[in-house]
Image (cartoon, rainbow, N blue to C red):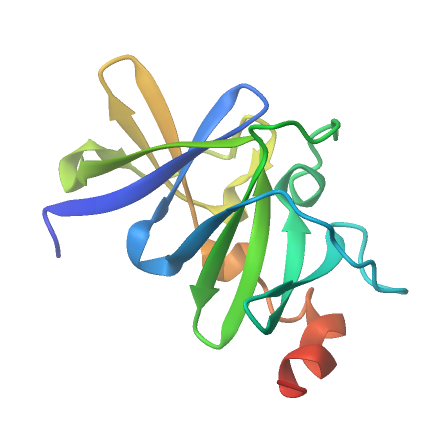
Length: 154
């Protein structure tokens, strides 16, 4: 097991979340999202990112956190897990840090309204609490099944 893990920190409402750098392809400014009919509510649509059609997921909606208007600090974090590539809408992307393995604890039942299912662990760094997301669960292919025709059409 690695002693350190580099993560990207982003914000949703009042909580800080983290995803491993190796699962992040890029961080983009908010842009026009083309809606797709009959998708699940948290899938906002698709964007054409450098020639690749990428589904966009609003993490506030995915985690049942009240939605707000997008601002200048709103970002789309493009992540890739296995064969799934998607963009995650977050309030802001703040930082890249190294996390010590011993600062990460197992997930509690619920953190900031987010079910433990989506949480890989919680890291304590001085007075900050970082929620490490389990992107494999967040990008659950069964829930995103409506996107399969798009991905196979690449």
